[in-house]
Length: 220
Length: 342
Image (cartoon, rainbow over all chains, first blue to last red; front, side):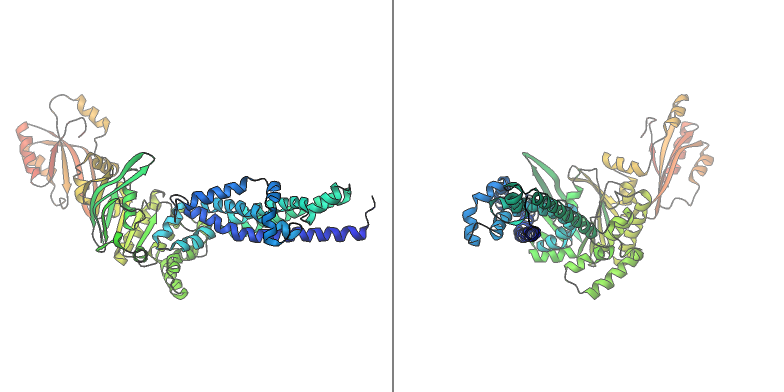
């Protein structure tokens, strides 16, 4: 093995930044899409606040559809769409698109399950106070579910880290790309070990932070 | 004032239609405490939810302060709901908010300024005796304290009506008593109309002015507490009354009487109101040459009036007993009993 240390660490650093950028941006966009979708899923559900017999089943089916496609297939299947959005199908920016398409429905489901944990009695009590529907959503459902939402979004972030490593397979950059291009294809075991360790560390950090944050919100 | 006019509600569950309330007429006067009692599934929960349209009646009308609430626009309904406080069996407090913020929540939803909210919440915390718990979270409170927060929250918008949905059913007897005392105080100090549903007859006896008994979605009996408790008509009502006023002769006494020979003259004497002036039994015994043997007795208070019943065995000549009973009848109600109960 002839790894030059002067090349090794900068490469690792660059890949780490790429991974963080991919996860960060795709998380941001996935939240922008997923949070409202999750809320809509809950409020339009039969028997709920704004029951909608058309919107709920349609949305439900669309989310199920995207959730059922394995990420590695989604990655290549939506390449044309990716090209339309970011102008290229290679690189970190291009990897963000499938990551968002993967994570948004996932987050919508997680948000849904968090919001459904809020006691219907509390919602009813708020209705009885003369609250408007949006007040019930943003001043009761979301704050009451916040601690659980944070734990669930932590799960989504970890899912995204895993998926971003896969995105490396199609030249998406990041730690996954590095591991495959050097560690796997060129048998540079050091790089493989370091990237895997970094991924493990990242996941540990995210989970620890998520747990702490959720606990602070729960205040107990 | 709340008025139900031929209110019915059906639920469709799969292929089955369930009649939750069946043509209910009911009027709750301003400033009174009105209780609706029934077993679970009698429809009382649905009934109380029709008052603030958490349930929409399938037919019939609900009037609140002379307004048909179903005719209100969404905005006006929200306005109306602010005038109707509601408390629940399981409190339904927001776990993510402090006691202070829970109590101020309805005002905050209504967009009231912070200074007004602060003032009102402080006043209510004091009223329900939780000033020292203002910054606690609901999960740090006992059941009784949670219900006090629920009550303070319901009062924050200064409502004219308070709906109590099994408000004491999740509490132990002692806490129940303290919550009932609080409700009584609220009714007195704020002159609020209280409509409460419960399955506990003790709660009804304790604080209600009038009561309706519900079964299978229908009101089967209605009246003042005194009338319903002292003279229940329907068998279900009688069973409810029995839960707080035991008027059955203990079986050991029945066995004792049965073991004796000869005719037994056993009567139930019903005492209502101001009977305590004269020693009726003693006079009857002395003047008519009969002996009396009290087998069982109970005296309680209903709406501030004493009410009691004694089960008495009379011994002596038939004619004397007859005369003695005539004498007693002038003052109290008399009913002949068979030994096998009532």
